[in-house]
Image (spheres, rainbow, N blue to C red):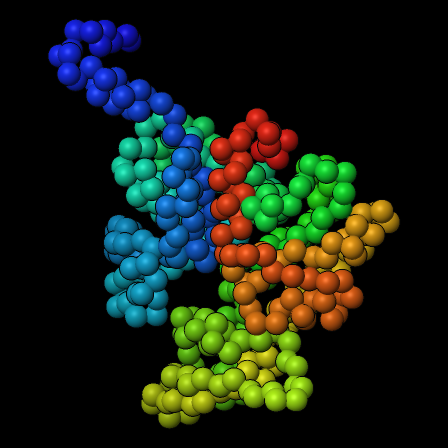
Amino acid sequence: MKIDFKLLPAGRQAEFQIDYMGFFSRKRIGIDLGTANTLVYVQGKGIVLNEPTVVAYSLEDRRILTVGNDAKQMLGRTPGSIIASRPMREGVIADYTTTSAMITYFIKKAVQGKTMWTDVMISIPGGSSQVEKRAVVSACKQAGAKDVYLIEEPLAAAIGAKIPISQASGHMIVNMGGGTAEIAIISLGQLVAYKTVRVAGTKIDEAIMQHLRKKHNVVVGERTAEEVKIKIGSAFIEEGDGYVERTTEVRGRDIQTGLPRILEIGEKSINEGIQKPLKQILEGIKEVLGMAPPELAADIVDKGIVLSGGTALLHNLNRYITYYTGVSAFVVEDPLFCVIRGVGVTIENLDSFKNAIK
């Protein structure tokens, strides 16, 4: 179809032409669909959305009630007729219908309802199966995407961390989100060695819940456990001169009496409780280090291990990894936004990163 803009009023020709071209031009958006949080990048605008990956729906008819921030506030607080849950588990889709509805919500919110002619790039765990990949593509298509591109999270995180992945040099990145720890060695724009450990922030929260129940006879919910992790969670305790243990109040339900209870808990106790998931991540890092060819291993020793993702913010996690591997580890700036920054750079420069796109 061709429109002759000269037939329009003289003062409106330019305005109508801009609207017309904007309507039919392809929009590109990037999505970091995480177990804990979803972030959206719009081409030319940057990161426009950062909300929890939580959906609240009616149990009776599966009708979606709310998504994101509002839904997270309902976790553990809903009546029997409403369920608030995370449709992603360990980095992959656990509830297809709910995930598709959630992606639709996030895309419409990001592009202000104009989903026509929208191309989507979405990050996926390294080594995802074909079934998992098809589920992600199908969910995006259901949400109205025209074309769907996939990029593995370790590569996206490395691009977001400004690592020169195309060089003939070894770089190691550990991207730890809510559901998975993506561990990879990258050279010449490809994953040379990688492992997805399905343990990260959510498992650490669960470990805190279990620890408080077993050691302190207090039952707490997911949100409270996450708050404890943020306030006093520590992967590595250094009791040097001047050390003062951090503490916080925890509100929960006493197992024995069934009544509300408040107790003060210290970081040493929480550190004890989260050792199992930390060791699982550490073993994954050691395994990938063991896969590295000698020359790339030497590069990693020189450059260190890059830590990204929200779980990288856990206090002293870099020191924990450095201590037990002997390789220096450091956290990138704004680690929570590392993957979505990488997705954004990629959609803005598709030709430059075509080898990284699935």
